[in-house]
Image (tube, rainbow, N blue to C red; front, side, top):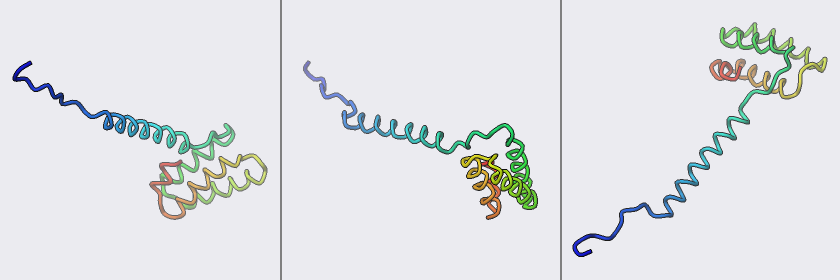
Length: 108
C-alpha cells in the first residue's frame, strides 16, 4: 500500500500487562480490606451492647460509654463475650476515650 502509514498506534503489550496487574492488585486490596475490617459477628444476646455503645458514641456521652464498658467487663468475666467481640468493643471505647468520636462512631 503505497502512501499509507502501516505503523499502528497500539498500546505496547507491557503497558497492558502492567495495567492488568494494577487492576488486580486494587481489587485484591479491596477484597482484603473489606474482609478484615468487618466487625466480628456478635451473639444475639450481646446486640443490645452494640446498640448502647453506638448510642453513647453518637451522642458523645462519655458517661454512657463508661457504663457500657462496665457491662462489657462483667460479660467478659462471666465468659459471655468472645475475644473478637471484646477486642472490637474495646477498640471503639478506646477511640471514644481519646476523643475521636467520629472514628468510634464509624466502627460502632
